[in-house]
Image 1: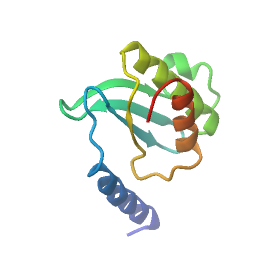
Image 2: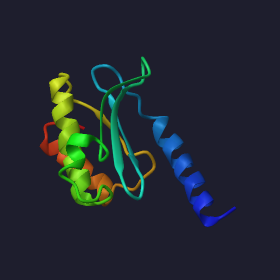
Image 3: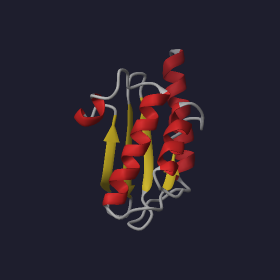
Image 4: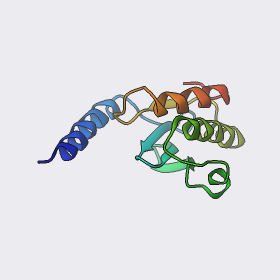
Length: 122
C-alpha cells in the first residue's frame, strides 16, 4: 500500500471511532465536515432519518464568487458563517460537531470558530 492509502485507512478508522459516540437528531443534528485539498464541504445531518438538513461548500455558486481558493482557512471561515446562517433559517441552533477524523486544527478549527460566531452551539 502507498502512504496515501495508509493515511486514508487510518483517517477512516478514526472517523468510525468518533462516529460511535456521535448521533445527529432532529433537535441536535450532526455537523459533518469533508475537506479535500481544494475545497471544504459541510452538512447538518439528521441520523435518525438519514437526511441532510442543510449543506454548504466552497463550490456553491454564491460562495464561490467571493473566494479565490476553496482550500484555505479564509474559505473555511466563510463556509462556517454560511452554514450557521442556513441553520438559523431552518430553526437550528444546537449541533454536535463531527470532525470526521481530521485534527481540530487549521481549516477545521477555522470553520468551527466561524460557525460558533454565527450562533451555532456545539
